[in-house]
Image (cartoon, rainbow, N blue to C red; front, side, top):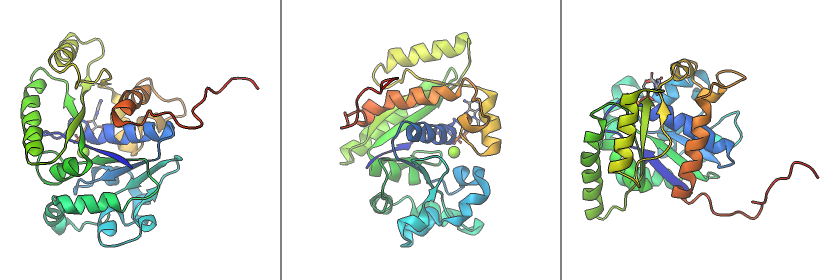
Length: 265
Ligand SMILES: Nc1ncnc2c1ncn2[C@@H]1O[C@H](COP(=O)(O)OP(=O)(O)O)[C@@H](O)[C@H]1O
Ligand SMILES: [Mg+2]
């Protein structure tokens, strides 16, 4: 199983939105994907509403539940969710501390079955569960909200990762992903160009435009591609992002049945 985690110092940059939509896109591309909600505030779980209660999530899995009791299969083939599970309001801090332990997150990953890719959504900040997730998966996707000063936070993120590496934790950056970019907005283009110039190998070509469709999809608790029978144009961005990340994840290795599919017999 391959895994990576989301990492951002700031909240509200689109981590959860990217994680959910990217997990969906990966599953559509035939990668059996499990989206894991490691944010004790439960952003992914909350947005998915009633169906989440049937399974015990991260809390259950760590307490010894079988994988099939913990994970939630979705209606999308190949997409499953590991929600936070039931965290009483008074236990949020305690849960946050428990999930900050690297051996705990390693044990979580080791309990997962029948999954090609585990995508860990994390709380904001670089410590706590986010650090444990980064060190356990060894790869981080770093969303940056597209605004003039956002690239100034990158050196601090890279320095923390370098520190972890010198402490013996092999963590690398899967990519820097600019989010909430403006369509045809010259300031957004300037930030993108600066990102590509400063971090040519880290800054992804794909970026996520600011679009009202995301707010609508969040309110419905669905990936943006599923909010209507004809998905809005931004929905295609995540297929592109998935395709860009696959080689970085080693998911592009040729499979036995990876032949062209002809239109006619
Ligand atoms: N590309 C986007 N365009 C418009 N709104 C967005 C976009 N990405 C996220 N949002 C909205 O911004 C808010 C924060 O996004 P979220 O993914 O929850 O961030 P985080 O997980 O980093 O806190 C949500 O209301 C979400 O619907
Ligand atoms: Mg979030």
